[in-house]
Image 1 (spheres, one colour):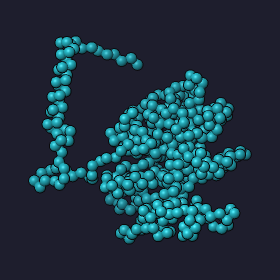
Image 2 (tube, rainbow, N blue to C red; image 1 turned 90 degrees about the vertical axis):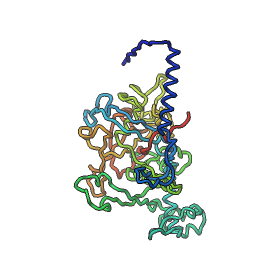
Image 3 (cartoon, one colour; image 1 turned 30 degrees about the vertical axis):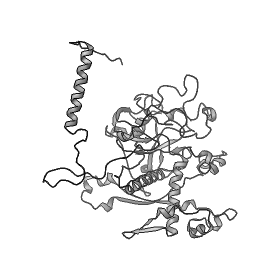
Image 4 (cartoon, helix red, strand yellow; image 1 turned 120 degrees about the horizontal axis):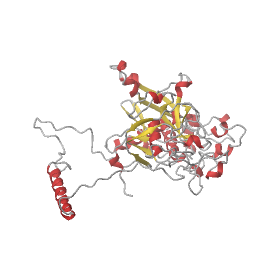
Length: 445
């Protein structure tokens, strides 16, 4: 759309205008400074005892830096839904204008190396408790991380002390003592704000809305074999999560519950550090909502089919722009047979990599076919904390982005699919978001 520019007549020459503008600017700055707009007159220390209202800050000065590996997604409005014909005629994603608040998002999918930090933290915390490396506060035992960091994993004495974490003799190969992956369990405790906010729950004790559960967090490496019948993928099962060559590749074999547990751990990990420095606690890391994910994937291109624009999967040189299943199945044509590095290909206009292809990504949203018809147009979302006893239909979570084994249709920013929250696949990963102000993340380029 062309924009008309109107020119107003000037009563005097440009030089005089520039001088006047400079004087007005200096006068405005002087006025703001004299009014204390820049914090020159802000009060520090204890409140004066003068019987007047001065306010009380919730904590120390806010000094949260830019989250490493994340980019800021500014607030905006876009048309959520398909930007092309609904080839399935399913009508599960009607086009709708919505507005999204700003947030920070991982520039790449969570990698094997990043998820391994979570696995090692859980491993070390369990081992520390077995070895007695704990502190007691208010009747609760906490891990003494100063001692936990000294654990020597190759030492025979250490192995004897953590025997409960080691594979039982009948499960060992050539008698090798290895960590039992099923023993790596993260204890999750969250507060269900959605349930607590219901009018019928007003006045009920807080304990009724605290959700506690244990989550096994080690990735299911057998997905590479399970997902594809009559297909030789054993090397990926044996090496993908454990070999350093795949360290910067997206983690897979992680179900929705494990991805959510990772975000919860990441929150605790950050806030524990901030608390040790007597700094303000931060928002929670979490999975993006379906609307947030689509808005971020579009990169400001409201009506584009793909993160890079319309309408093609190749650039003008004929190079493929994402990792997917080209044509009838020429998997290596795009440069990767399975997954590729999480920072492969060009990022979109927000600086996000692989928002189309590589691995599909979990969102926090419940998959409901008609959800677009009744969601709010401000930060739309449908969430449901499904229990193990709930029917499978209530455990469906929205997947976005398409993966290395999908055809081009699933790479479109408006295409939605789902998977069950307790299911892991070799083509599903995730990235996390956090709600922080943008001004703390400005960096020089």
